[in-house]
Image 1 (tube, rainbow, N blue to C red):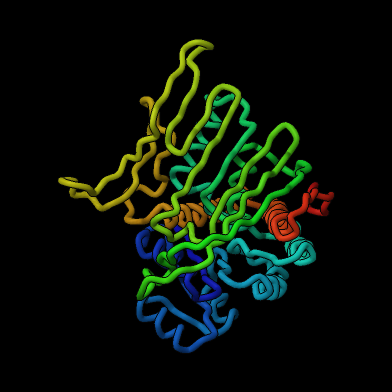
Image 2: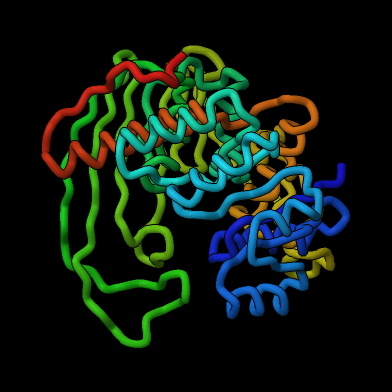
Length: 354
């Protein structure tokens, strides 16, 4: 497998793909980056040693296997309208459409086309291990998820996978809380001095009938050193609480084990730092598909998405289709509406729910 792709958009998110390609030169090649700003083009070219162009056609002239869009939602739809008629496969970052009408337009443009969405959370090592445990049947039928690991549509994508949901009806209600907190680090690191902010936290219930979820997330959580992530997955025969698994060998024989990260590159290990596997109770629930590679969990997930896109282009194997994205973003919009209005919202039948 050798994957040649172009990136449209040269911002913060695009650099995750550039890092993945840099660490996996035998498998990934960024043949072009498109960035309209001259200073940013110069920066990307010098830092990543890639060809950076001003317009889309120059990138397409490099004949990529597919293009990756790292753009705002409207720019993404504009590019798709130009590219899809040419049968160019597209992998696009999860775009937070700000209205139901925008989701419907996104679906209209991309329906039945060569498009997949780069929703990466399902491929992060620990989430992938938990999904493997669920698929093994150790928990029985999973009916409840309490999640505090990601915002909006990212959280919804995990909820629906953990609960094995498709387009089931859903009732949503919740509340937004605001409280003072010290500002933590962001994309550019720690603040220059102590600063107090008003921190927002959403607490939301999603009722799918026989299955349900609780969403709990603060707007500081991704980079904060004092706001930790939490996850509880409950099935009929067991549960996963963060990295602790509790199951039954039989009705009166409980078993508990910890999900252990096999991490290389520490102490006397001479290999590069990387996660090799997630194991527990003598079983391997996740094996890094990229091998020995110096990447964070997020970057491993991004690189895995690229390999799945290659399989989609060459073998027609979808991994996160447009209708799945539309459903996740639709539920995320209803969550936002529910906390803003302090109301209960209900899903309605949509065109992508077929």
